[in-house]
Amino acid sequence: MLKLVKPDKKYEKQYKDMMDEWHNFGEKIVPYSIRRLDYKNFDKYLYGFEEEKNGFLYGGIPATTLWAYDDDRDIIVGAVNIRHWLNEELLRNGGHIGDGIRPSERKKGYATKMIALALEECIKLNINRVLMVCYRDNIGSAKSIINNGGVLENEIMNEDGTIDQRYWIEL
Image (cartoon, rainbow, N blue to C red; front, side, top):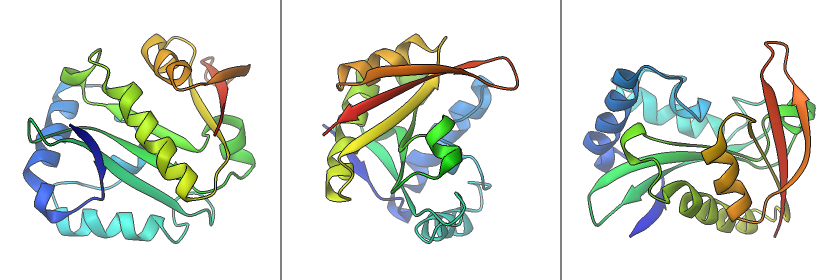
């Protein structure tokens, strides 16, 4: 069964396995909150998640990172980062929820379930309308957002030429 768990020392091995896999895969790890510090210094790494609750990452906006833990298999399959409200930058291209699934666990329905669980957390935070953003060419991400009620508002061209799609989910 998939559940969202707070970053904790008891998941150190499972977390490092996920991060090692992601690094070996050679792609950008998302959400940003799980790649910003060196996970090999795990105690310092865990402290970084405490800092984000105080708005350290997003210009004073509190955020919460949770890991998607499959307790049947005893592995962490991904992570979500929930921003408690939006500033101008997050409104443009970050949204309320950033999410990512480790490479070996994609196309198994985890992203859709993980977002559904993150939306439950948003309700607890009194977020009634959730913005999620993904690259236009990330079809899997778009599908998982749409599967959770996401409605495309628009697309925005980034400075690097990539195109973001902005979806709203009413809770």
